[in-house]
Amino acid sequence: MLVKNEIKKIGLLTSGGDAPGMNAAIRSVVRSCVFHNIVPVGISKGYDGLISAKMTEMNARSVKGIINKGGTILKTARSKDFRTKEGRKKAFDNLKNNKLDGLIVIGGDGTFTGGLVFSNEFDFPVIGIPATIDNDIYGTSHTIGFDSAINTVMQSIDKIRDTASSHNRLFFIEVMGRDAGHIALNTGIAGGAEEILIPEEDLGLDRLIQSLKRSQKTGKSSSIVVVAEGDKTGDNVFQLKDYVEKHLPEYDARVAVLGHMQRGGSPTCFDRVLASRLGVKAVESIIAGENCSMVGLQNNKVLLTPFKKAIKGITEINPELLKVSDIISI
Ligand code: F6P
Image (cartoon, rainbow, N blue to C red; front, top):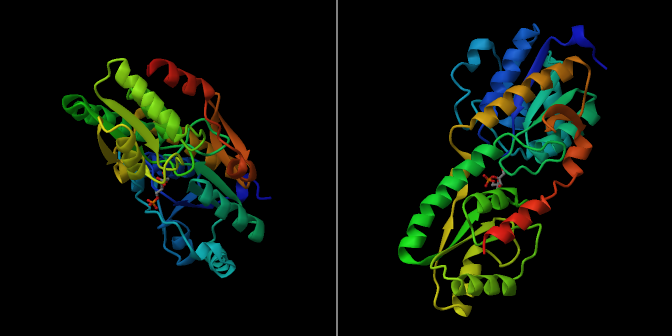
C-alpha cells in the first residue's frame, strides 16, 4: 500500500453519463491535489483516454470558472475497450509510463466496476466519486447531479402543467432512470403528479386506470403521470398512453419524453457543495492509502464505501415518499 509521501501524481477522469456537478468535482480534486503538493493529471474521455494516453497535467488555474458549468471539461465515455484485458493492460502501462500513483474516477456503477476490476488486476489505487443523475449508488444519500436533475425536471413538469390544465389534458411525462425511480418519485411529488410509475414498484395497468377514473370523479380536469424510463407497467410510455386512451377515451392524452435535457445545465448549490466535499475527501483517501472505495454522503458525513458494496448494494426507494405521494395526489 502506498503511503502519504509516495503519492506524487494522481490521475483523474469522468466516465459514464455526464452529470451536473462533475466539473465542480474535477475542480475540487485538482485544487486538493495542488494543496497537498500532488500533480493532478486530467485524463480525457474516461477510460478510453487512459487506454490512448490522452493525459494532461493540470494546475489550480486549469479549473477556473467551471464550478457553475454543466457537463465535464474532461469529456466522458462508456468505454468498451476497458472491458477487455488488453485495454486495461494498455491503460496500466500508460499510468506507469506517466508515473501516476493513483486514480480518481468520477461516475456511476459502471465506472466503479471498471475501477474495481482494474485495481484488482494491477494492484493500483483507485478511489471513486459518485456522479450520476439517477442517484442509484449504494453508500451515498446523494450522487452528484441528482439534485440538479430533479430541479430541471420539476421546472419542466411545471411548464407542461400549464398546457395540461389549459387543454384539460392527461400528460405522461417520461423521466430518466434506467433502473431506479428516484428522479420520478421526487419530481412526481414536487410537480404534483397524480401517479408516479417507477421500476421498484409494480402499480399495474388496472390500478392506473382506477386511479385516473378516481381523479376524474373528484373533479380533476387535467392530470400528470410521471413515468421513470425503467418502469415496467407498459412496454414504454407511448404504449401506456395508448392503453389509457383505449380504456378512458374521454381523456385527451399526450406524451412528453424529457430525455437528455435532464442531464444538462448549471449544477445546483447542493451539487456544487457536495462535489467540492467529495473531491477533497477523494484526494485525502488516496493519500491515506485507501483503495477500491467510493466517497459518499451518509447522514451528512463524508464516508468511504468499498466499491463492491457501492456497486452491488440496492438503493432503496423511501417508502415514506410513496405514502406521501399516495396521500397528497387525491
Ligand atoms: O447516466 C444515467 C442515465 O442518464 C440514465 O438515466 C439513462 O438511462 C442513461 O444514462 C442514458 O444514457 P445515454 O446518454 O448513454 O443514452
